[in-house]
Image 1 (tube, rainbow, N blue to C red):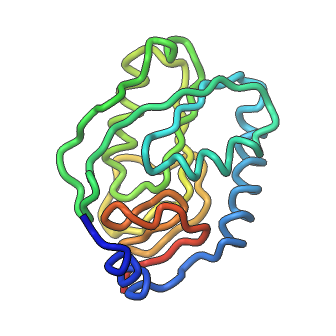
Image 2 (cartoon, rainbow, N blue to C red; image 1 turned 180 degrees about the vertical axis):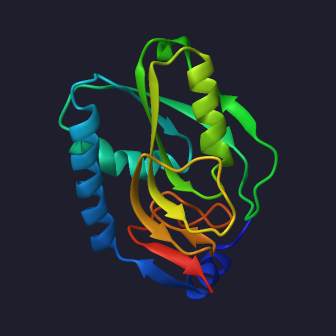
Length: 180
């Protein structure tokens, strides 16, 4: 467990790469794009806990169409800065069968987690499965998938804020920061 002072040092050892205003502007654009594509589909929206909780809370009120909401929990990081083995803590429910599903997550890094989520949802009989992320990390390696909706691209650095954490802290920031 970290002290408040150690958490503050993490913040001091970082720099803002996306302002809170830019985050809000990207949410408005994403909400518009999602509404255009899915507004008539009565989708099931699934938020990936815990990182997507802030992003979900910012995006859902901007979606002005009927939807059903639930959550899933698949983790690779467990408060670490490097991904490990995937662990399903809360799997999708049977309610995905025959549905148009929109999965919300904070970041698409290597794409492994979202690809596993999409595969599981489609294997359970979903009609369609779309992914929306606040940000996608720019990597040189080939990813198994890219999001259907993305707020913005971020560099290949460890980023936090807007639901993304650094060692379990700073999910509450309105801006996106990167460790230096």
